[in-house]
Length: 87
Image (cartoon, rainbow, N blue to C red; front, top):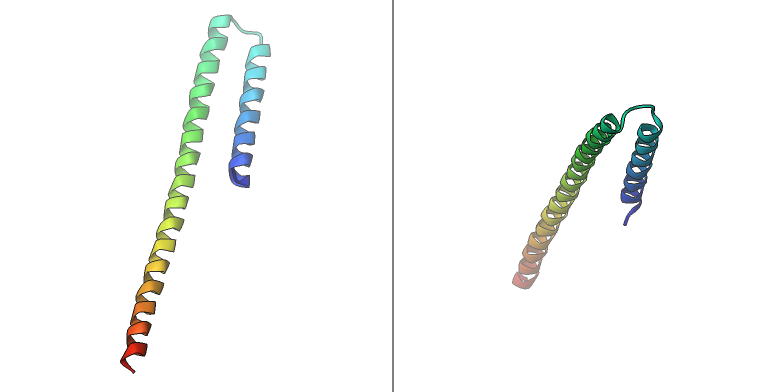
């Protein structure tokens, strides 16, 4: 796991722990507390999914850039080899 993933995981875990602690210690009925927990959990899951999608898109872009650069270098290498062999 790289540093970015560790940071994101830590932030999400800390946020979850803080929210749960805050909700559970707030003076409210059990029904309202459960409803708040469900809503907050759904919000956090949506946020985590969005962040994950951003990271995946970034990885895809980097992968495509690397593939494109490798293809260019391979083509240039083949051209160079052909020219060398003609001489």
